[in-house]
Length: 102
View 1: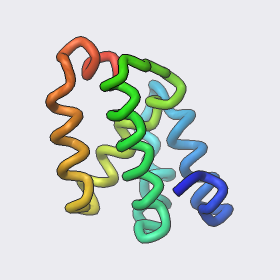
View 2: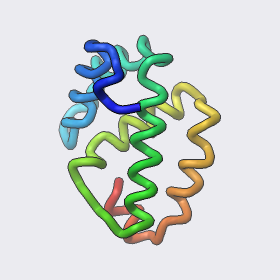
View 3: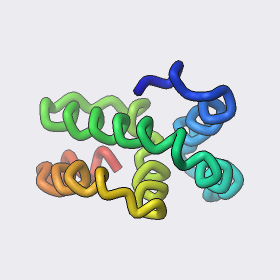
View 4: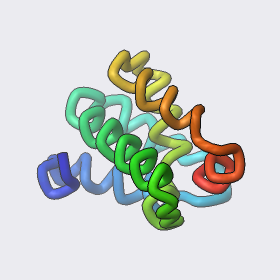
């Protein structure tokens, strides 16, 4: 699922999470994302899947990965079973790449 397929509210939330890098935890955006769980979960899964795929190829794109912390947090909060295999793939990345991604 790409960003253009999300509702306008979900697009806004994803954009805010993507732009989050450092600073206070984005509580408001996380709360809104939780409310849109069904809409936002496929996007979060795809984004995480793409991150792991690119990392395996050695393609490190910081802009793509700025929202990984939020994605991992939300998918864990949702107890999303489809995220399990993706997270395991991430865990098998070389340590230096995994640290750079997060």
